[in-house]
Image 1 (cartoon, rainbow, N blue to C red):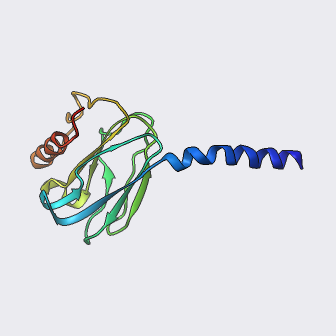
Image 2 (cartoon, rainbow, N blue to C red; image 1 turned 90 degrees about the vertical axis):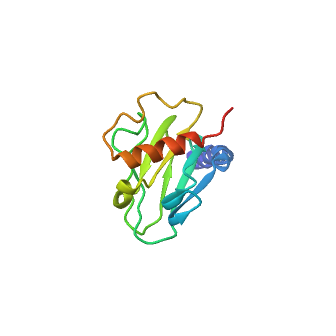
Length: 145
């Protein structure tokens, strides 16, 4: 009985930390403020423990990590077309997110987790030119401290 009480007390002591995590919503859109086929927002600042929730506002989109654009300690993710996906941020660093069907049209976004700087070689992965340009635009939208 004492073990059960101890486990309950331990779980309750961690509850305040879970409450500190944010849920950040990102819309997958056919048209947004930045044009056609976009994530909105295109740049997100998050903390380890936060959840980024991708919402399929318009049909035909998904959210998944771009190969080579995931920091160590963060599991890559791949959402299904037309489905919402929620992803917990587990490591500091920069994550490149794409909509696979619309990568060639530049449907990309960036998640910066924690205080880590964006690595100089972040964009050094094979991708369509339009996607690279849109990643650069998203990075330019990051808040300056």
